[in-house]
Image 1 (cartoon, rainbow, N blue to C red):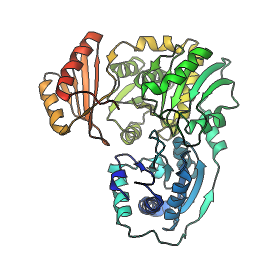
Image 2 (cartoon, rainbow, N blue to C red):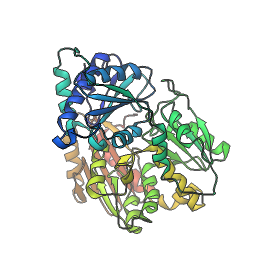
Image 3 (tube, rainbow, N blue to C red):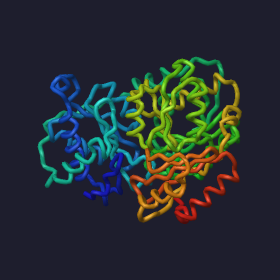
Image 4 (tube, helix red, strand yellow):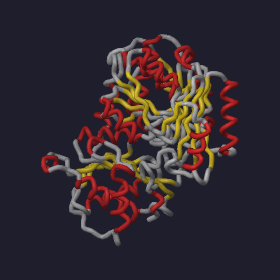
Length: 458
C-alpha cells in the first residue's frame, strides 16, 4: 500500500497500483478500530453505534474495493450496513439517520476512471481528515503485516433511497411554476440519484451523461470550464431556466444561467444567502476566503453575519457547527446546510435553486447580474519549489495592505485583493485575485505572475 494515497481530506489513488483489495481491507480494519475507539461508554450501548455505513460510487472496481473494505471492518468485530451505490451526501444522511459511529464512501470523486479512494466520516458525519484522525488510520493500516482475521462483525444491506428522497424533498417549496433544467451527471452518481429523487416532480429535466458504468465522456470535474460545454449547449437549445453539472460522486456542482453563462460558486453563495436570511435573520453564513467581496456584502446587506473560513470541507463543516450557521458556500462547488447535519449536498442545493428561481419569477441571468460587480482571475496554479518562502515574499511586497494568514496569505487593498495558498495535495501555489476594474485586475495579476512564473494548466 502506497502511503502517498493518504491526502489531507481523504484517501485516493490509482487502482490497483496504489489502492488494491488488500489495502482496502487494511483501511477498513484501521477505520473501524479508530472510529469505535472514540465512542464513550454511553454511546457504545446505543443501537447501531458499533456499526459503520459503507457506500460506493459507480466505478468498475468500486464493488471489489467496497467488499474488501467491509471484510476488514468485520474482522475487528464491527457491524457494517452496506447502503449500496450512492452519492456521497447520502452517506452523511445515512450516518445520522441510522445512528452509526461513522461511515466510508468508496469513491475517487472527480478523478479519472482509473482512480479510487475513500471518504471517511465519523460520528454525526463529521469529516475525518489529516488533522482529525486520518493520520491515525494511516498509521494503523500501514503497520498491519497481513489481512487475516475472522469476520466476527455482521453485514446488513439497506436501501435508503426512499428515506433519502424524503429528506431531500422536505426542503422543496410548493410552486405552480414549472421549470425546465438541464443536468450533466458527468457519467457519475447524479445519473442515478437525480431520477430517483426528482423523477416524479413537475420539473422537466434534460439529462446529459446519465449513463453511470464507470466510464466518463468528459472528466467528472465541473470546475473545469470545458467540461460545462454540453450543459451550456443543452440549456440554450432547449430553452432551460438553468443548467447544472455535477462531479463524479455528486457532492459538488456548477451552474449555468439560461443564456449558457457560467455562474461561479461564490456568486451562487451570494445568490442563495438572502434566501436563507429571509427566515433566519441575523444568522451566520460561512464562505471560503477565495470568494468574491460580493459574498460578504450580500450577507451583511440582508442582515446576516458573514464568517470567512479557510478552504476545505473539514474546516467549513467545523465552522458551520461552531457558529450555528444556517448555510455555507465554497468556491469548489460544495454547499453546506445546517438542516443537513452541517454537511454539503448537491441534491439539496438543486432543491434550493429550484425554490429561488420559482419564487423570483425572473431568469437566473437577471438575478446574478447585480452580483457581477467585481472582476476575478479564477483560481490559478503555479508550480513552486519553496511554497512558504514565496508566500512570505508576497506578504512582504504587499505589506502596505491588510495582511492575514488564515490560509496561505491574503492581502486586501481598497480596490483589489489576492489570496495565495499552498495546495494540500499537489506541489502548487494557488492564486486568486479580484479587483474593481478589469484593467486593475490585469495589472495586479501580471505583477504577481512575474514572481510566481507561468500558470500550470490543471
